[in-house]
Image (cartoon, rainbow, N blue to C red; front, side, top):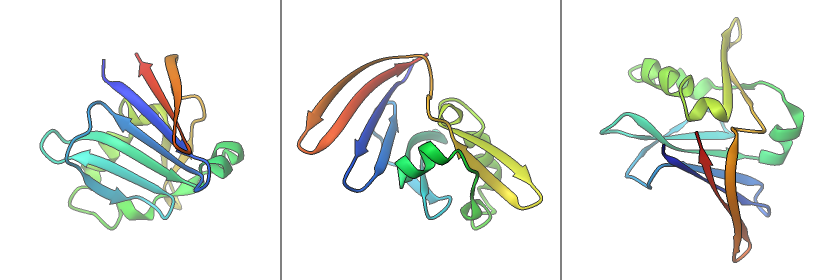
Length: 129
């Protein structure tokens, strides 16, 4: 089981999610709102950043992911990662006539969590099964 750490910046309305231990990663800008971080050695997701989080969490609307098309060499890998645990506990990805899109899932998993404030940020340590 890999620990998932969730940090929310209320001033910037940014959700930061880290899967497992921090690792050197490549960032893929899937949209102007979503960044996916991938470990190039293991090809596993290391993190996810969602801008304007509160808007997306309450709207439950699909967000187009045009950035996937900008990386045709890794598109199959990105789609595989997006459709797998732990990322699919946070995003539901669909492919349709308008391309690839994602909907933010508000409750990622059954969890045990501890919260603490560090400066002006709320940090949640969450263990997902």
